[in-house]
Length: 241
Image (cartoon, rainbow, N blue to C red):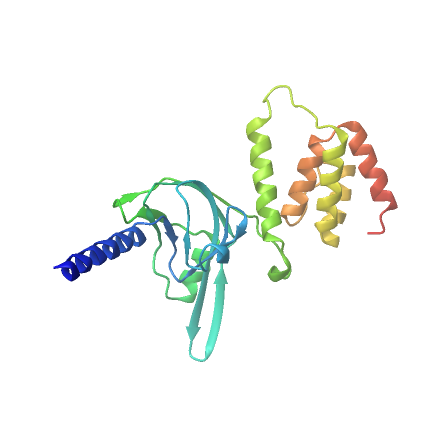
């Protein structure tokens, strides 16, 4: 009798563990996607490229479309720009990203430019609302990009745009604006640096190719006070590139 009771108790505890794992908070994407960051930390700390464990509450998840299309003996990789997702994870949720199945080069090419998807909570059977932003397209070698730095900059712009009064515009004090200008100038390539110099001389001039570095340089220059602008221009004169 005692053995039977122990068996029942053990089975009950195991069932509790199984139920908990089935309804733990999870975010999962199809194999044609890649999870990059959770709350600005690498996804591998919380799971892997396709599934991560999350606590209930507000989170930021960065992921991208990442599909390999094979044709004969050749393979081609199609990637979207990283997508920054802000959402509230319900308690006990199992969130799955729902996206169309991509099987051809043309489909992958088009989808990488403009991904569309929904997020469904399989535990409740309901769709989950979210906000999304996408990093700006960059030229050059993508494996050299500081994606996390770009995500943080995107958040900073969002925070400033939400907090800043509409009228009148407020200039930032010299120290942070000047620091950010130098930071983004050092992150920029030669063409972007040249475009920024031209833009400072004539704001009507438009760069041939947009970049997050140029966008951030122009943003911080417009936010800076006169002292910071003058200091930055003097710093440019002393810069070799």
